[in-house]
Length: 288
Image (cartoon, rainbow, N blue to C red):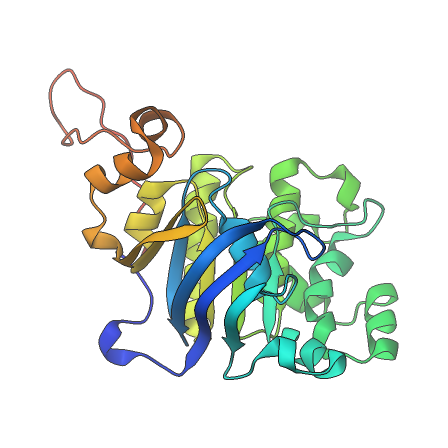
């Protein structure tokens, strides 16, 4: 079952891009996003898909106010972040949370502190230092970790975790963050299928229960089609599809990725009915 706000129950506008051109990094000059226009409303859950190099991560960085537009306009929560002072722009950033594909976790840090770092943007400098050295919200961190089946890792050191465990710790940060917009980059890249199902279910349910807005990049097209109400597809820095996930057809997938990628890279599952003799049906990821 797909999730996210429906067109008839849209909340306030959270993201508004108008003809945005942007590079991949603040000091880069070559644009990788070309004339993007996009609106995302409060409570929506949007999957960004496209092949590697299509511009998915660059779009998240633009939305996170990490890279300014070269032209066009960007508004978050009704404000133009690059027209604000540095202080006000930093305050605006506190209303969003960016979870990169490889979370920046200090190797000798305890997991509890790594997770609670997701709450730092709303704290003062003094409170941030106290929280890192003397975590007082261990229960909050434990609940987020338990939701991702990592409750027993609360007091472990980060460098003792596997790659998939570190990725889930980075996502646990989002679960504890006091943010209205979650920008999640490739949350399933280091996870096996069972863990992937758990992570998507938890992210979706947590965002829905708190009426957060979720924008998530994915390579797994079938996950995007089953678990998100809306898909935005990028190719070479252009939006080539923006609409209901249910309407994004196999032909459009093949056109987006190419036939070989559609079979190998984006994990399209064969359309084999359950119970056909002599055939093994893929176990679907069901989003509740």
